[in-house]
Structures are given as structure tokens and as C-alpha cells.
Image (cartoon, rainbow, N blue to C red; front, side, top):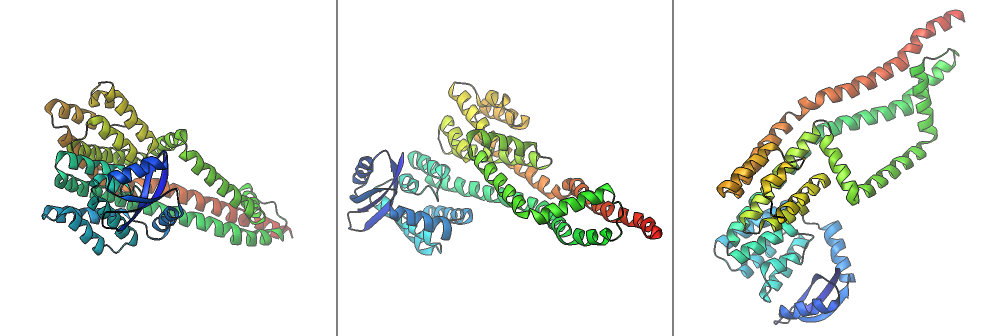
Length: 406
């Protein structure tokens, strides 16, 4: 599939532009005709598309918070009985984000031309992802759009809460490690050379810790560009490897094995899985489609593979709970709750309850994260201080003999 940018006019003569994926320009023109639009041009990629992507991606991107706020307002106005065109027009005028304003105007134009709401939203995947569009489509088909919008609001709020809690939890160790690295660089660059000059005057044999620190300091000052280049190369290679299919899985597995953060990552992944799958299933989508969309929203490569395996097993006719039991990262609590939900016909309620349970678990882990990380951080600080103390004070203790001999 290739992305094409198009320009067309609707029945009122208004200019309509956008992006659409197809194998060639001809299906794009057919879709535009089916929507009641008169195609003016269909270009592969296109300058207009490039400018729009550049503007949306670099200067006026739409944040998760803005999408959540829009969804909340969308649900409120739609619940109040306003027509879809009036809702989209009102929200477009109220938006302060140029990209979101332009997207809403395009969606309103598409809806006015006869396109379905979900298809109009699907034309803007950079703002509204597959999960958002699929839930809208399910709500339209089942006639429960108001309920779906309400579920979307709750789901987006949960996503923001989880990301905010994890971000705040990792802030403290990031600051400590940054300070340690900064102190190490300052000591090696400015402090150790001064001590080296001082010790060189007495020509005393220096202990091993001091010689190691001086060697590291001399190497860093003489070959800093080599270290910077090696660090940059390692970072680029890691980024490339983490984007491959195998690399995503390996990096995901590593994230689940990290001390303290590994268990937190597993809880976050299970929480997101339960919330998303519950919302999709509640919207009326078939389970295989729910699992397919859920897998696409999972960021951890290892957990993404687990959900894909789960979808494959369910497609073969197995139950969700029995398929979960053979996976590595679904906790026994979720497996048992899913089995009960399947037996009682309340799978969406059980999944939502499990999502709430793991929200509490994540919150509890985040609150106690500083306590859990204290032994690791203290070990790093103690090791660094000990190394500096031995490197500096051992030769001072030995210098007294050298001075007495002189």
C-alpha cells in the first residue's frame, strides 16, 4: 500500500485535501467518487502531504492530552443531541491547535460529503490511531456511538494516568544517575589531572586505584572524540536493532527482566491489555479483531508477540484463558479472571476489573519505587565514592615515606 495525497471538491464546491492509502491512484479516485467528491489531483506522497506531515510532526503535533480532551468534548456535545456536523464544526472552532483544527475541518467535510465517521477519522492515522478508528466503526455499526465515546474517554484517561505515573516514577533514578555521570566526568576531567601533577613531583610509586583513575582520565582527555563517537555509534546501532522484529522482542524481554522496573513494566502491560481489550470487546467487535487491534497498541515487543500468539490460538478455536495460560507474561490472576469471565459471559467486566486491579498495583509500586531503588542507588554512590577515596588518599598516605626519604 502506498500513501497518496489528493485534492478534490465536494458538492458545494469546497476544496478538500487529504491522504489515502491504496495500490495505485485509481482506487483513490474511485473512493473519492463514492464519497461524492470530484477528484482534482491524486499524487503519490505529494508536496502538500509532505508539508502537512512536516507541520504536524515537528511544529504543531497533536498530543495525547489534546486527543483526550477532544474526545471528552465530543462525547458531551454528541450526548447533548447535536448533529455530527455541528459537533465537529464547534470543536474545530474551539481548538487552539492548528493541526487538530485542520484535521477536524477535513473530517467534517468528509462527513458532510456522505462518508462514515470512522472512515473520515481513518484518513488521519497520525492523530487518531487504529484503536480509536476501530472503536468508532464498531459504535457506528452497533448504534452505540455515545457509549463507545464514553469508553474511549475512560481508556485515554487511563493511558495518560499510567504514562504520567511511570514518568514520575523514573524521574528520581534518572536524576541520580545523571548527577553521578556528571560528577564522574568533572572529577576525571579537572580533579584527577591536578592530583597527577602533584604526585608526579615526588616520583612515588602510586597504588593501583590511583593509576587506574589517572589512566582513565588521560584517555578521556586525549581521546574524548573516540568515546563520543563510540557512544553515538552504539546508540544508533541499538536504535536500529530495536526496530527490527527480533530486536523489538529482545528489548522487550530485557525490559521485563530489569530489577524493580521489570515487574513494573509487566504490571503496566497487563493493565493496558485489560483496559484496551475490555473496551474493544464491549464495543461489539469480534474477539479476534479485538486482539489484533490490542496487539497493535502494545509497545513492548515481547508482550506484543504474546498477544499475537494469543490471537492465533483463539482463531484456531481455543479459549482465551487456556491460551493465556501457555504465555509467559500474563499473570495467573488475569488467567483465572478471564476463565471466570468466559464461563459467566461477563468477560468485558472481568477484564475491566483486572485493569483496575493492576492500576492499583502500578500506583502502589510507583509510590514505593524510591524505597525499592535505594539499595541500587546507594551501591552506585558508595562504589563511586570508595573508588575516588582510595585513588586520592592511598597515595597521600604513602607520600609521607617519600617526603621523609627526600
